[in-house]
Image (cartoon, rainbow, N blue to C red; front, side, top):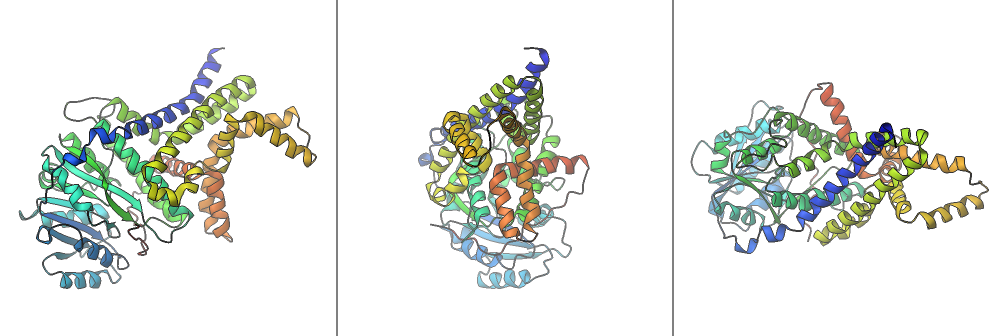
Length: 494
């Protein structure tokens, strides 16, 4: 095998690196229960100031405040500061009504000049909270989230350990009745929150505190400057990194459950995830001195954490690289291309089965709603290819039978065309999933939008978002904080 072939095969199999790292991450998640014996954590009820940034949140802010007032937490130790970012709807009136209903416990603030983003709104509230010494801990949340009654006290107990600077909760998708898209998101959150954050805590390095559930000790916030970052689209990730680089731990509490309403349309999801992806790229540059540089007091520079971060961030590029290499090999060494592709997809099968099974078992309640989306997360075509990788004989026989029934001869040219299609599909699935966004706003979009997502895959759709973030950052496009519209459909499911 010549040098060119070796390089091409290596580029194909680079995609397997992502899969192996993903499996290892889930293996670590399984160790979480032994690393975090929650039964030994003592109860602690510090005085907590909850800060809610609100811009045109009239549909949801009232319910969120009411549910906070009903938390299983000492009333005298809980205050809610709602920062109205110059809303133009009925948000000020709703906030005023809640302040009147809960005197001394709900504190309304208003910015006369809005539109500067969530981080600027949070800083307005933080300045007010830190101006006196009442608050011993500060919790940053979103305007639409619903906390289960025990969530806050399950989080605050970790602050009994002075080494802990911040705590985050398990965010779950709670839109009801929901849609195919919110069920995809529900499954994604099992993977990205319930499992991934468990594994990161075992590693000792949390990538990001959930934006809707960030509990900080006062000491931690003051140590990082008493403000959140306004220079990126990922202020929550920056705060998480600053906490850990400052020598304090960030903790994930999986038993503190918070329900959130997520986008119900592909367009809204795209805007939200594009902001997140661009934020991650900005964080990657900002903390470029951290990656793969182990240091005392923080594990963010660890090799494993770096692999987890960059495998996810570079996944679209690796998909394009693998696809281009397979197509090239197809024309210069077809047998080698088939062998490399088969190895890659056998690893894919193991990863798919392991991660899907683990995720569905880790949250049976959500699994009952999302198991179909979990199975089809890679997309229908990719699932068929996965089956072909482990059952080539039976599927080949079935395909030949069906083609024979419609009078299509099975030739070497047809077989080669199918192989070439599968190699191209490694990248093309992202484009097909993206077509769901394009089709959604057009005639019959209610039908064609979901069809493209199911065929191309929800996972590839997220990869397409990351690829778009690459382009936005390379073009130095304006980084605006775009709010996700909320309608008040979230409920705390039981």
